[in-house]
Length: 105
Image (tube, rainbow, N blue to C red; front, side, top):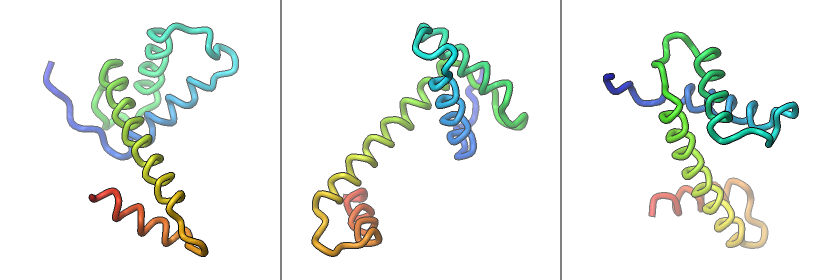
């Protein structure tokens, strides 16, 4: 099977939405195996995705979400670092400026 194209921003957002929908399902909740959970994510993603997007395997979706989660945790840590350094009277714009500097160095 040939390798599919990279994920678009729209696919990333949609994957996160599907993941959240399934993980917060109050009917099934935590009473499902990891394999069953990812089967549901893959099925929902495939059934509801834009038809022009590439077909994605369960493993591909798992790996992509791990990549997104890793980047999100790194961003959260940078934000916390900047907030902890916040000088008295610093605005949210100041925090964003500090954050952008810290992310590139």
